[in-house]
Amino acid sequence: MYAACESMENAYVIVGKVESIDVSSMTDGWLKSPWEKVREKYEALAEKQIQDGEKDYDKVAKGADLVSQLLSDLKTRFNEKK
Image 1 (tube, rainbow, N blue to C red):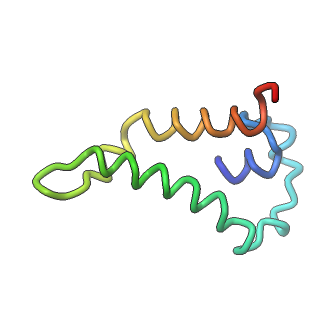
Image 2 (image 1 turned 45 degrees about the horizontal axis):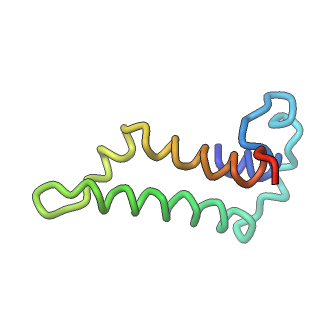
């Protein structure tokens, strides 16, 4: 989702635009940036969800906070007035 939104330069997945994305342009090098942004937020949230001395990645993955933070980031970058 995040990579598709970056490709469209829009915080929201637009069906017609998703269908027209040239996936061949999404090389490993290009995908590294969106992957790192998602991973950074995922790790930061996991740091706050320590259970029995370990990060609770499962709780982060199942919760709404990660999606909320990613959407907020995308809105700031692509949809809010600058």
